[in-house]
Image 1: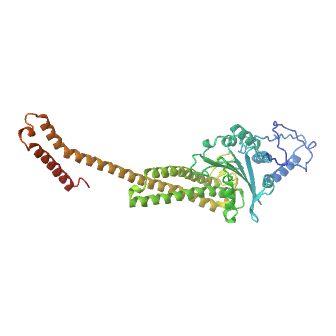
Image 2: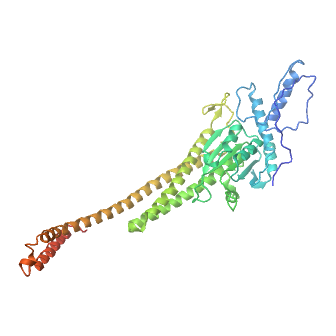
Length: 452
């Protein structure tokens, strides 16, 4: 079933210009446009500026379209007008968020008093615009694998910038962990573990973080229990699991949920490797080589996820204190007050702890990898030792029977001087001498340690 908000979606229209003068533009007090933060004050200042201009002054204001990007455009003269216009276009696109067949959209509200509580998608979209930081909302889009063109059309319908549409509409296996800072948002793409560790699929999480709103996409198919959503909601029922009732706090809680899964499975694998080590100390044949290979395959999967998660958290920590200059370039040393995307000042401690934990999980996976390498070397060394022992026994047997074969060959080829033709007891005496020689050589090899 399709879900549509009460406000009808805006259709694309061509960019126009209009001429505004003092005598022809009355002050409009019933505007229905949605403004965020200080946008209302900016509009009042623009109106005051228009009144101060002479009657023949001409102001050309382009109308924002659905494809207006979130990134800062250095070609604009007025940075505040450009930023307001870009965010307004994106916000108006979010008002038309609807679900495709097979897609599940869930929304939650976060505030200081009520904590984490469910709400409707319409309440989340409208509340994120009107609360001005008092409340934050999380919208989770749980989409099964579908055609790229269908998903691209849906993403264009909610007015995401083209490069975001290209990144999110690709096949899940082509996604890559990354952090993209924007003027009014931050895009975080993170590799996560699938629901079943036995699965070979590569799952990713994409989170678009905006002031007062967190929009998440999960690339892996839903399971019969609904995917990661019920697991995460159960954790969020505990108030302490949410660092702050903001979109950045919800992002860290969502990232921590997946990183704790990675850390948990890595610790379980480490425990199983320690048990294998103890079993091999008692008797090395208690552990099969296939068990070590299976553990190594699982470790490679965990290590790949842990490495990408650690890199993503390091990048997010660096961008949390960064700024964007007037030319749209990320500046880590700038003292400007224009922050990238959103403010992490209230969750800096949680972000630092999460970054340290991601690095600790990666280092633990590396230690387990080294431990598994040692176990495999021990097992392969034991197999080589068994093979050498068998070859030494074959060498001993060959040495024992070599003189017997030589004597038998010599006597068997000389028919004129065969012992049984010259003497009545010559043949039994030859057999006894051959057995005595074999016994003497066996005793010698045993005394010198060849059979140990």
